[in-house]
Length: 68
Image 1 (tube, rainbow, N blue to C red):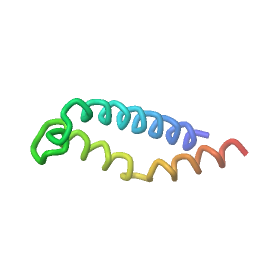
Image 2 (cartoon, one colour):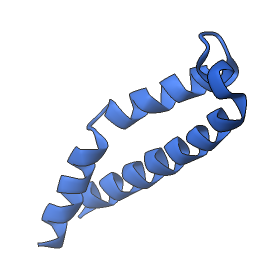
Image 3 (spheres, helix red, strand yellow):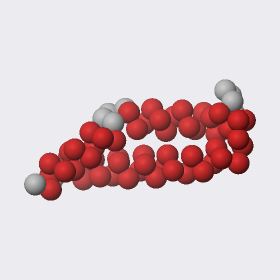
């Protein structure tokens, strides 16, 4: 069960952070994804976190297996 708990925590944190970053990019328009801007850097970093140590889809599979 600790593995499923870790998967739930990682999934929740990365998905929530992605949502916040998406909202932060919106007001900037094209400048929000311009290389070198603060929000662009954050956007890139959260994308990497969603892939590093297992993509969000993999975390969902781990959680689903634990529920069976």
